[in-house]
Image (cartoon, rainbow, N blue to C red):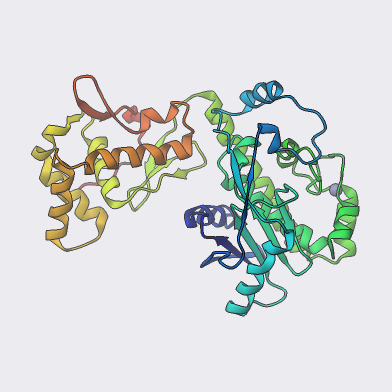
Length: 386
Ligand SMILES: [Zn+2]
């Protein structure tokens, strides 16, 4: 069964890639197709909804809740407190969210039995995490996950993809779904999670209760899809938990490099930090020059930087290579500082911004040297000899 993942224009393509990469670890009859198509709700404007308090995020049907409890309960689980979004993009009508599924289906001639799942930063009027229609289409909201799960967004999003696939196969319409989902959480994939914070519990329990197993049987859902879904959800859960436990242990991760030279954090579910060729050039330069180098001295290492860039850029045009490296070592240009901050941001995305990332990035010391702090014994099999 083919599952198409599509996105609206403000959702990073790389986020979809990460979700598909995670889902594709688990083989079976479900296959995931990543659409390059970028949907833009052009003729169908969004409204902006203002949020006045954190509890507005969980607003729908949260009975009583004070802001103080919020801070306390979140700080136990999360490594850093995310900034509070004041506004969110919203659709007034739930059905509007499915207009683009139809367009995509027509444009790419998608079969009726194939599933189309939209990942979007446009919220829905019901304040749900996700929602499926009765035509094999589902919608998943990509934002605000940091308020519920102290992990990268790819984990809950991949989990949502699989649980929506099962729900699309289990229920013929909204009415049936709403009558069968569990309004009081039991740790089943069909928990409704009226209080949105219960989603974390649902993901960690990852169970299909006996009642829901019976529905799957009655609806003749292909057993291989059920087993692949269960395996996927358990796999996501265990990856997410091992990353969480590793982060809270405050230990340092071992680092390897993929064949392209991107750093891979081995103890964090082999998370890859995707750098551009010039960023990789700088990163490897500082991995090799452990003692550090002052910015003003970079020109002395021009040949080494050039050969690294030649290796990582894959381009043969020496004039372009020389030009980029000249910009990088020129203290009047901001190319060097710009690359450092981009590398820092990419490590922060993986490790959170509570300071743990600092050992892995290029830091400036008081004596003006730049260096990467990471204990070199944590770097395994370094085989980039240029
Ligand atoms: Zn159930």
